[in-house]
Image (cartoon, rainbow, N blue to C red):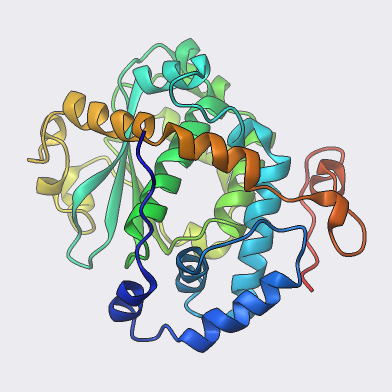
Length: 301
């Protein structure tokens, strides 16, 4: 099993001229006054600062939301053993969820998602999101800060049956995490080879989207419109690129997860909020999300 190698702080300082050591130290001091939060490395603090464009208060909010969401959304952030979890093994089989090696012209990394098993009943929303979160976590930690992330979803072949595999509450909860706690600079969410069911799914998604996310959401029925954002050559061979066969890319991605199995198990065991020592009153899922699943704003000290 491999140990995750964080990007050294000195490397991050070279990459990001706007990053200042004094900001990292100030954030460290704040974290030390939050006993309910897990201990964080300098490299992790940099990722949160960078994703919030080095603004201190939004960074604190993201950190709080990140760990609290992971504690109280077990459907997305528990059972993270890439070898021992039957549910994750099934999710690995039905699709590819992988970062592409080459970037867009702006330097954005593209995460390519495509379901290969087109039987809707084999698609379990929570399990796929759990797997995707693990892939992004591993990428974030091992690669450090990046100019931006683009999510590209190939929907070719998806039938109307997939609409029934989503629930408004499941969508709402995950979009809360994506919009309030996701420590990356999200630059676009693109649907390629769009089929009619996409609009049905998006009709469930849109009520929970902030305007800034609406503005970076794109649906493409032709590659010509997609190419304005994502060069086709950086994508897998089967969709017109030269990145390699989907089967090979998927296998490589899954092997990386398996190689870091011990890190995922440790992360789940130790990197969560300890509500018993939260300043003030401890939070529960009902406190945060409401009895019906509606989210409430977290108080950041």
